[in-house]
Image 1: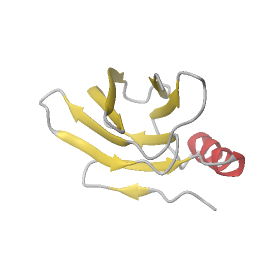
Image 2 (image 1 turned 60 degrees about the horizontal axis):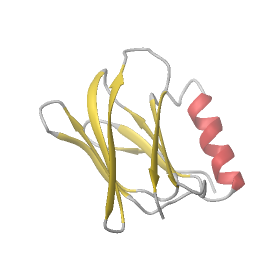
Image 3 (image 1 turned 30 degrees about the horizontal axis):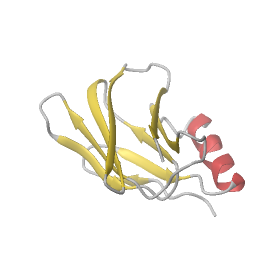
Image 4 (image 1 turned 45 degrees about the vertical axis):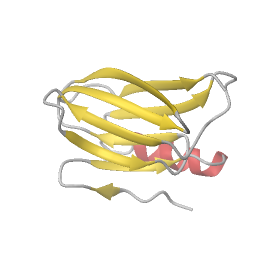
Length: 117
């Protein structure tokens, strides 16, 4: 099944990666000229197993939420405007987060969020 790209008022995003075929479809989308996703969020347990179904919130430096979504798999691709963002993901009652810098026309920013499970 082809992952569905969604739009909010501020960003485009796609989530998935359950199973090899879906991960390959996301990889193809991320590397296509039409993809243009500058942030790639990976969700996993510290054992290396992928985690899905996390609540991910991305906020700008003003604290304004630019994306708040429930993931449909362990990968989340996001097309963010250039800037600094806080990324937080909740899996169950545990939250992981980090700050990222997205450059205009830069390489894809990888974000790895890992839970001790």
